[in-house]
Image: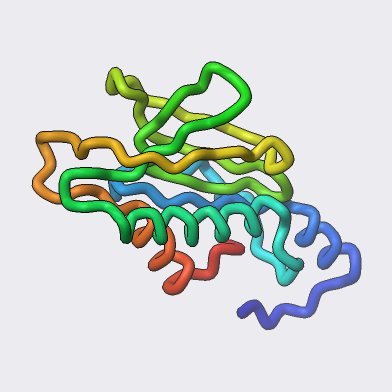
Length: 151
């Protein structure tokens, strides 16, 4: 917690700066450079609400999967198709982003406005080179429990 005294203008400026947060199955994967982004005590944005709710849905869906399947996501309203979920994030106030790979293995990123969010969770066979399936939902939930996602 920051104990610096701020002027009204500084407090308003800090509240206006967007926040970026992402978690990936690959610990080497990094988010875009957010070094200039400051935290604030603002209420949750629509993107953060959507992000946290999606985590709950994904985690709940993953609980139903056996060791031979991983969660993937299908997107409505376009030719996006299905991606294996390898990362997810939000960018305040209204953007959700999904990272993964398509059925051909091509690297994929979808950036979507929260008002357009319409997803279908799907079970795909896990990638054969991995011993255990990736469980991104549990990784995302653990991150919410262990970190301040506003900074």
